[in-house]
Amino acid sequence: MTDANRTWAGTSLSDRRARRRRQLLDAGLDLLGTPEGPAVSVRAVCRSAGLTERYFYESFTDRDEFVVAAYDHVVTLAHRTLVDAVSLAGSDPSRRAEAAVSAFVTLILDDPRQGRVLLLAPLAEEPLRRIGAQRLPVFADLVREQLSDRLDEGDRAMTATALVGGLANVFAGYLGGTFDVTRERLTAHCVRLVLAAEGLHS
Picture 1: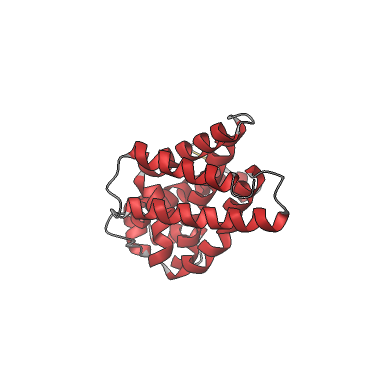
Picture 2: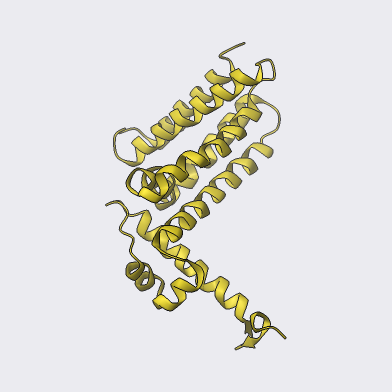
């Protein structure tokens, strides 16, 4: 039996490590997603997670690696949320746009920490500035797949990238208090932007 599979109190070492990693990432969501802005240190993360630094370094090499992992955790959740919303919406462009925007608004407003980590933390955290730009194509590709095949690939790629960048700025502004509008108005406006992009080259 390997050490990773050795059980203690009914759980294996690998399971306990995974649980501690989740605790740390949950703490990262709290600290990266505060309204006051990110306040992440190894000591703060461990205090929030209720773990010692020994367990921090069990999962992460340093603070920067941890910050990227916490950010990527939210990126993965956001991408999966959008994929699921679109897949359930059928083939009608209006329904797909409304489903995707509504799902994203729910993600970032029902738990604003997630929105702040995804959209605001890259503006404040040096390790995320480059990573945030690298993750943008993941969302642009998803949007590009929804655009009409009447567009050539160049137009679809540019339109999708512009749309994702524009929507990200709108959502970031909303979370930052720039736009004093209702959630419903925010959603409706963003749906119109998506549909306008769909019809841009028709």
